[in-house]
Structures are given as C-alpha cells and as structure tokens.
Length: 232
Ligand SMILES: *[C@@H]1O[C@H](CO)[C@@H](O)[C@H](O)[C@H]1NC(C)=O
Ligand SMILES: *[C@@H]1O[C@H](CO)[C@@H](O)[C@H](O)[C@H]1NC(C)=O
Ligand SMILES: *[C@@H]1O[C@H](CO)[C@@H](O)[C@H](O)[C@H]1NC(C)=O
Ligand SMILES: *[C@@H]1O[C@H](CO)[C@@H](O)[C@H](O)[C@H]1NC(C)=O
Ligand SMILES: *[C@@H]1O[C@H](CO)[C@@H](O)[C@H](O)[C@H]1NC(C)=O
Image 1: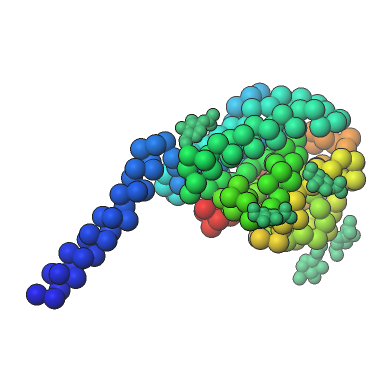
Image 2 (image 1 turned 90 degrees about the vertical axis):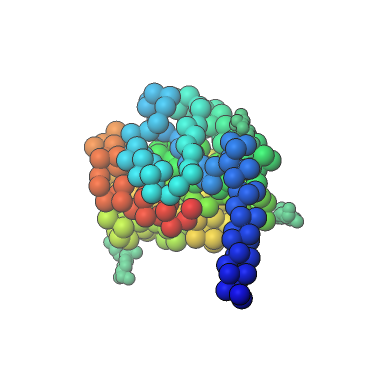
C-alpha cells in the first residue's frame, strides 16, 4: 500500500510544481532569451557572427527565445549609436524581469555590438539586482574593449594566445565589461589571434579577414554553444 501512496504523492508533487511553469509559458515567458548585438555596417537583423551558435543553442536548450538589438550599428567615434543599443537591451531586460522574473538572458555582441553589450553590463553591474542575476552569460567576439588577462578570455581555438592583449579602443571611452561579470564567471570574450580589433595592434585593419571570420569559424561557434548551454 505504501508504494502506490508514495507514487501518487510524487505525481501530485510533480503536477503542483509543473503548473506555475506552464502558466508562466502561457504568459509568453521563456526559460531564457539570447540577446544579440551585430557589428558595424551589418543590416538591422541577426548578425552573421552568431547565426550558427544561436540556432544550435536554441535547438539544444529548450524554451529559448531570441532578441535582436535594435540600434544603428553605424560608424561612431562617440557613444551615440552604442547607447541606443544599450537602451534597447536594458529596456528589454527591465521589461522581462517584471513579467517573467525567472527568464534568463545571454548577451551576445560582435565588434561594435560587443561595445553595446559591455555598456549594458555597466548599467546592470550590481550582481544583487535581478537584471544582473538573470543575466547568465556575456559572449563577445572581436571586442574592441578586450581587457588583458581576464577570466573568460579565449582565442578562436579556446586557448590563451590572445588573453594578454588589449583591445584597440581600450582607454578611449568607458565601455569595458563591468568587473562583476568577470568575478562571476559569466564572460567568454573570444578574440581571434589575427583580429587587430581585439588584439589592439591597429585600427587600420578593422575589416581584416579575421575580424570578419568568427561566424565562419567552426571552433568559435562550438565555443559559443558550449558556453551558452553550460550557462543557461
Ligand atoms: C514585455 O514582457 C512581456 C512578458 O511579461 C511580453 O509579453 C512583452 O512582449 C514584453 N514587451 C516588450 C516590449 O518586450
Ligand atoms: C564607467 O561607467 C559606469 C556606468 O556608467 C560607471 O559606473 C563607472 O564608474 C565608470 N567608470 C569610469 C572609470 O569612469
Ligand atoms: C546592489 O543592490 C543591492 C540590492 O538591490 C543593494 O542593497 C546594494 O546597495 C547595491 N550595491 C551597490 C554598490 O549599488
Ligand atoms: C598560456 O598558458 C600557458 C600555460 O599555462 C602559459 O605558459 C602562457 O604564458 C600563457 N600565455 C599567455 C599569453 O597568457
Ligand atoms: C603575450 O604573451 C606572449 C607569450 O607569453 C608574448 O609573446 C606577447 O608579447 C604578450 N603580448 C602582450 C601584448 O603582452
């Protein structure tokens, strides 16, 4: 007699636990949302740099969503365009934490989009805030504000060949990742060995082939999928 009673108890427990989750999903909430910011000159829409890793993450981790940051991505020596993107991210997460408090976020940024993401981490720098707590991953490729010797710095093969390099724009504007994200292991800053934007040798090669290669490099896409699935 004991066994069936226990089994029934377990079923009821499972049912009770599942009900609020189901209700939440009917409200349009997801388990997580991948928020991506594209690079300079890419048309408004998904970035070529993340297409493969986003598709694979959405298919392997259930109940995910996808938001494309709305911002100009025009050449910008100030913060005029990136602050528009930062606002889009902060609005999106502020709204999400209200209606969907358990929804998680991953911030993905490519080139100028990495700057946008960095700036958003500065707004939600306090890891006690719900916005920062629900932001589980910051994944950058070709980050012009790449800081040297940080946890989460990797090259295109997951190694440390570029970990001690400083991005080309470091020291110009205050647009690096908020330190609290490194402290919590949430950062993966992927810098290709010959990408002069994140290794900082010169800005002349902004459009060198390696700065444009991330989306077509299998190992980079694999690194992204591994990190996102681990964090979400
Ligand atoms: C705000 O969040 C709700 C879910 O609580 C969602 O249905 C709605 O689309 C969101 N609005 C915006 C502008 O993202
Ligand atoms: C950079 O900006 C952030 C957020 O706007 C601010 O909290 C921080 O103090 C600034 N850091 C420097 C060095 O100005
Ligand atoms: C961080 O947020 C917590 C909770 O909201 C607050 O008590 C604390 O003062 C904040 N810390 C900073 C440095 O703003
Ligand atoms: C990479 O790691 C190896 C082994 O720990 C170390 O000897 C080397 O100095 C590191 N290189 C950089 C650029 O940090
Ligand atoms: C990074 O480390 C490598 C290997 O230790 C070294 O050859 C290189 O000069 C370092 N680069 C910088 C910018 O510190």
